[in-house]
Length: 408
Image (cartoon, rainbow, N blue to C red; front, top):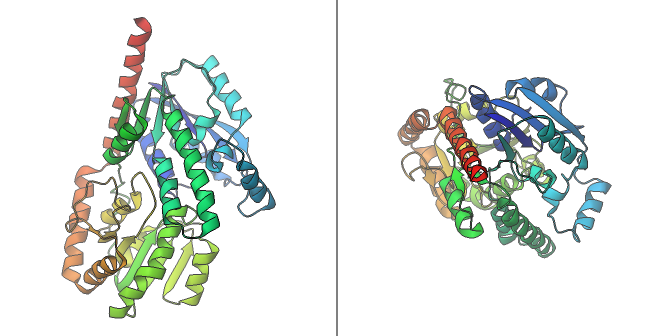
């Protein structure tokens, strides 16, 4: 197939879940298909981001774009103006007439078998009407994420704002999904949710993968009292999860183990999280790192205490591939075919989550068994080649169905 892949950003640095999934998927798809990658290119992207695009596409089309800096005057102005917009701010800020023109030009000048819209973001720039074969690749059910933000928020003003954004996202996502010939989710749970909530018929799922050659134990000395969390800290679900853990769960853990340490690894930590680390020498916040593997390798366990989110958490498979035991909430492990008490521990209440943490840290044999079982599972079942093959099969099926409809 000749694929036009639409994205809201370049993939380098490949340092967060959505980028990792797309990067690995495209590297596999290029074995059998031709990929043109059309994206917004932010002025803050690192210089090498354009040059390294050859790793995941045959041809790059980039559209210059300037995203408002968080907490800048323009950022707050746009938030205020968004109150009267039908679009949620998370999508409205990516509207680009230049990207719409480039998409139209590509479709006029080249014969693509299918257009893949990666996340909802590019969908705001797809011209209408069109008779192209289109697939929406939904890494998350976005409206569910915003609903959970609203439900977990206690600040009255913020709760009102999040309710507004959730309702806008829900209206847009429902309508947008029906504009595509098919929707691809990253878990059976998300697939079923979109089928039931949005009334979609052509909705499929692809498995989440992990690079088990890259993520493998290096044999570093383990700190028996160190917990690690990995993830982009400028993504609200990750920030919320860490603040929740530090405020509600860690104090309970420390009643039994006062010397427990926490390392938070991920780009752009918020001021509040940095302040917590400054107030507690046993909490380390690294910011962006070039390689998360050493932090996983030396930690006694990986934690995923998320209360908000959607899709699937790549961080869990990465930790399992490093043979680290994982303790997660139900939301954190949502959509992953894992068994509580075997490959992973799942707990939601703070006391229960803390008990699982203490149990893993105090029982080296248990931690070792869980780590070994986790690596065995991801190595045998969750390679990226399987995910890409499934995605390719779905796209080819949609193309065939559309061809039959047009011929009828």
